[in-house]
Length: 428
Image (tube, rainbow, N blue to C red; front, side, top):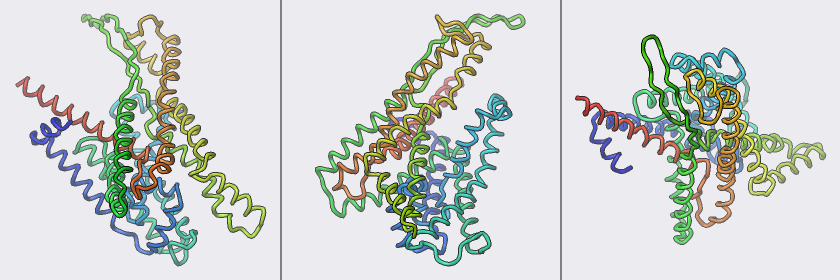
């Protein structure tokens, strides 16, 4: 990996791409410290320290949400829009047709995703401002509503910041290396490391830190192993005659990844788990005794450190992995594409038998991916209980999974660029 980075910096065009990405990430970190006026900093920190859902959203914004910065929403609206469009592609015929039309179809779907991200940004900004106004003590003072100029200004500021990040991410994808949106999330997660390290250095524990590093390296190794794991289905292509030409058949393989869902199931699971707690939190101070007791019972039962929360988190992540994999991988479409191109799996008849075979294989390998994601989801709670003496240093499974995935994919793209340059030099 180090040798690939050194070779990349020796190539002028790749070096420019890498420096462009670094420049965009510096701009992002600068914007995350530009605040939207009107927030009480002490109340804001108190709110985020006791709210798991806001903490997860803050993770993807690099701490911008807890600082109430103009990019506080991060790329969350764009991610939500992408998930919605992806799910809608499975049920809307027009989007299904576009997804099969190559580059043109992908560009149109990306355009729809951008359009959807704007109203989602406005909606999320309004919800976030409502939470800040309704907190105890209130983070934002003054009146609140769509008829208030202060609320509208804050909504427009947060929405503009989110759209700006979406644009910066697309610039990275177009002129840099790697996926721009993933890089924005990566920079947000890594940007929290200095403050966590500072909190640890205030009261260091060397033995616990060494154990923490060993566990972290082992976790990185396991994540790379599972993320890169795939089942290769052999595919044979028969000889074909087109016009006056005969194309010789060959053999290749169909790669099926163990974890095809990424971190999406974790986001789904934590959102569903924390929603009832969030709603119940508004009724804990109700004047109706029955409602207050029920709300307090829900809050105590769904304690993020409790057994019930961890068990449900594990089960929901496991289930959503199967759900999302079913949306992203279509055995019927894959079998049809193989049949149209003259391909077949040795020992399996084309058509419906191939579809059934692919479905069985995906269901089996998804078990490993689902267990992996479920363990990653609950690992931060378990490790936080073990490494209590490390202060701000934590080993978040979701954040570690994102960071490792972005680094691995970026290194693959750098090596592909280097390989392409070698081929160009050979052709000359």
